[in-house]
Length: 168
Image (cartoon, rainbow, N blue to C red; front, side, top):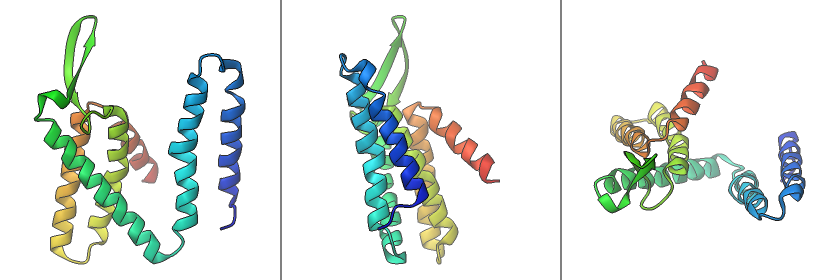
């Protein structure tokens, strides 16, 4: 494992995040947010860079994303039928539309995870060598898009649309 230029920029960003917490140390929220960025973004990135280094490991990593995304997508759809897991938010005392999460998970990060899963599964459909695999992948993609809709989070759709436009 050798540091690439992008790794150095990520470490510089992480340094700025941790140095930036000092003005807000008294609340503890800054430390919590910096720890989240470290644990949820930087650490998985470097673990992935260290582990995913061959074609076989890339396939395993991709399969892990697909299986994890399928579990979360199906879980969101199933829990959308269970009133205890459908989160209704209140604005000025008026209940808004319900939002589904993965059991009691916050719907916004759930939508973010699904936004990662959708291109992975659709990419799988494009390279599948047989029709049954492509059909199964397409069905999972539709379930993931519907699950993202159930979360009520528009941000993930906007990001996906932006990335799609940039990729064109």
